[in-house]
Length: 163
Image (cartoon, rainbow, N blue to C red; front, side):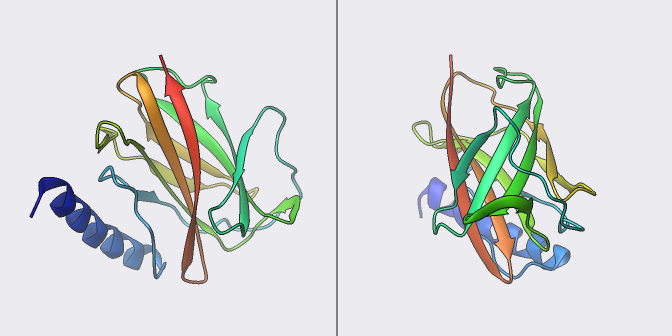
C-alpha cells in the first residue's frame, strides 16, 4: 500500500473518532492529515458577509462560506487565523445555526498539508474562529472549510497562492 493512501486511511479513521466525540456523524477530511472541528455555532445573528471577505459556495451548493484571514493577506511561514461565516447559499442575511466547521489546507502539487493542527471555535454571534493555521512554504495552497450539518458535510475550497 502506498504511503499517501495509508496516510489518508489513518487520517480518515482519526477524523471519524474526533467527529464522534463532537457529535457529528460524517466528514470529508482533507488530505493533509490535519483536521480540526469545533462546536456548533450557538445561535443565529443577522450578519451579512463582511466587506473584503473571501467567499465561495460549497461543492454541492448548499452553503456560502466566507472568511477573513488575520493578518490579511495570509503571511508565509507565520501563524494566522481565520474568521469564518456560514450562510445558506440562497440567503446570505443570517449565519446558519446548528452547523459545525472543519478546517484544513494542503499543497496538492507537493502531496502534503500543514505542519500544524488548526483549532475551530464557535463564537456567540454564530461565526467561527480558526486558529493555528500555518502555510510554511511558498506556492499554491488549497484551503478547505467543511460545513457539517445533519450528518452531511460539504466542502468550500479556496485557492491561496503565496510567493
